[in-house]
Image: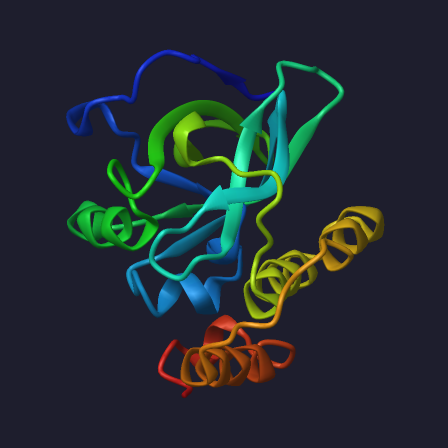
Length: 196
């Protein structure tokens, strides 16, 4: 069972080696195109949190996924734990919007198979939460495809699929992400990340 220290963001020097992905980076193809050093360790459960799509993205005006802390032992987020080369951490931080972009870095201990692993993940700042904002449909579907790829329980997958979403008005961005979605169902790690 994972646990969390709800204090300030952990300094970079204390960042664990392992990344807990639960949003659009859940699918290894999406993450691997950003951080190609990834090595999948397995699935994990982050206890005391709830997956919500309410983090404001100032870059594109939509909502992104958030690991929202509830403290309830019956709630949790399913995710995947990846080992990454530390040289790629700054790339991930920039893409995710660490700091000014509205995400803080958090750490927790989760079980990966029979082993406990210390992980880092991103959680939205209170200043960047808007429960009325919706994700773009392609973003929601990338998270959904990630849950499918990891063979998560059907009720969890279906909950993601039913998240209300909006059509991205940026046609070029929408087409690019829909192209990524199109290759996700049949993609495997053996295919590599340069598939588009």
